[in-house]
Image (tube, rainbow, N blue to C red):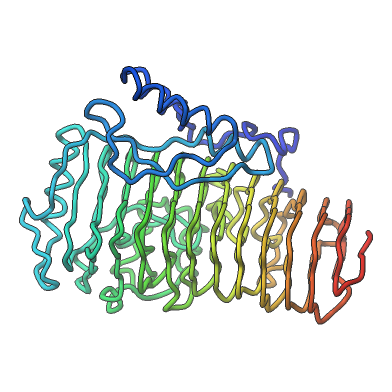
Length: 500
């Protein structure tokens, strides 16, 4: 049995739309719409910014909350340079950013106290509900340390943390209610992520404050995915796969918009995560900008977009206790049930450090991954700059994966590592891997430049490398096994030109 996709649309930004539809209003369109209600010089200035973006120049950088049109605030992001792929530029231009009424709802007006000990769970919920009921705006958190349980964002709400504001998440498990989530690619009912939204649109988490999950250590433990896998085999639906009180434990992610549209996470710092840190799932139009993640525990990926369409990850500093960015799309039978790819993803201007992959695809990629563009990434140290992983139990596909201007140092495995035998699991779902491109990149200090292995019955198809320099590579020859369509141009390893 094969899980290979129809590849007729490979490389096309619009091809193969996921089950979650992409809204029609773009960044450029939203800006242009704002210009229509402005007059005179303001409209001309905004039109000039739109024109600069259309010409491929960096977008205007502005602080969140800048008034653009009447009582509506459109949040701006840091600059994205012109990318070397037209399709990637189109993804950035068409990925929507949220816009909010200018009204503010200070959490302190709803009973929040930033003394580090008062339980503010109810106060945050009241402020967010009031903001949503009023048509939207900004829930503001002034400087202070706010002890809280789970925070659930609602549509048209921007949760904005001032400098010096820290959300200190509680060790009381009862403050984290059951929600629909995923554990390592399988849907279940588990304790809420620290910041969660479900089915919301036009939401944001912004500012320069800090999120601290260290206090969740007493309850946020466990990795018993095998229990969920037995429920999947039995046909138990997700809403009945209840983890708490089952005798099994699985951790909760840190920030998770689930089935949401038009999401911005900007400026904040995440500390002491117990599991995956940023986990947008089944969501469209997701922008993650200038966010810092840290690695203090194992299995704490920096950012894991899962079954998402139109994602821009820009100018972030991603520390992780596992993969830095791990693009995912579900695991095994549950992934085939949902059958939604992650696609149209741009990663630009990020710094990454961690024990595994800087840009990873998988291993939970049963729904497929396509149209990924990574540009001007610094990876130091990681095990792999590019890590693509699946097996014949997982299946799935990873196609049209593109890296340009990557600077990688101290890779403990290889600049690029591709495997179809991840964790030794086997089944009847052959992965479909290929269309990998690495250009204008450098790697320094690694055992290999490329370590790419397909299966004898299922080769990796299409590896392109051009204008790349690899130095201090301890094994001068690459590993290329069961790979077709290799094309190297102007590639050197330890000063020697490599042709394939």
